[in-house]
Length: 442
Image (cartoon, rainbow, N blue to C red; front, side):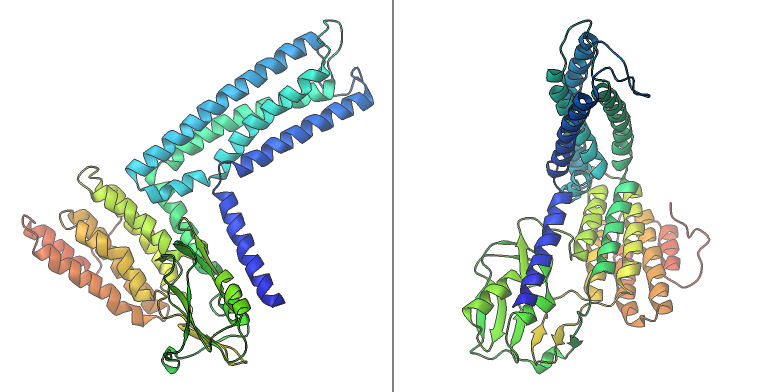
């Protein structure tokens, strides 16, 4: 069970790192603690060297003037924290209203925003802790190292605020947001462990579930965030079969079947099995590529809604979906059944296949863009590009699903009232292999 404990620990570490990235408190708190440690270190160094050391590149100032300076900086920093928090909340509100509530996580996990908040609070605490070391007498010298560090921190923080404002404005541009989401999805595809060491694919049809199989219910309600195939198999003795009754990215209710196991496992094995599936309160992208697709589709649907009516954004989303699917459709997915040398078997019948990824990416946008010829044209171009790409990469089995999307779109467009015949002919030409003179992204 030692190997299984390592697997569970690895999943816990991955989940903790993910939560750390999506916290507006933890990273700023670390920067704040660094500011406190820096204040204590600078004060100790000044005491050791003396306040009037004449060190090069340090500031000389009277204690009275330094007191005024540090108090002013501390007051300005704590005031600016409120302004930065307000800007962050406004950006979250704008992102939620304009794009989708799902994309708020991209702004929350932005490391620059977290770092600027930490710098502001850290500089505030630094100044507060240095103030008691000053005598306040007009003739006494101020501690040079502490004062110099305070001024440097202030300059860096002010520069960070300016950079943060520029970064925030750029981050609210839909192109940058879609790029970040698609890039994160591509990184998840690249990082997934398709076939853990010691496991090999098997045919799921060879392992029917017997009537006396034990059912392990899910202890909590939430989103399936992580699943360790190796950890599940290491949690049971040789010859055991495990069937996963859900998939990563799915929502499961407390008490619903999580795993089906035969022969029935021991209580200890049940505990280890439950810990090999991570169920969280919010959906994450630790192993869930489909969540990246979902976010991009949500942005496109919001852009095509009557309230927003922004077809250009929908076109950009389709282009980013094409970039993401170029990676997804040419990457091998986890087999539906895995087995090891000890006769253990893991069956995962509900995992998404490539055709389902295609449907999730295009179904809703296809149904919504029928009155927008430019968006429909962009979708046809992306689908045609993906069809050619999977052929070139040796994955022609995905072509029919892509061609089905093109066929459904054209059939729906033909039934759309009010579409000019010229627009219809142009869309029909985009579904062919011939190069269209207007085949470019707008």
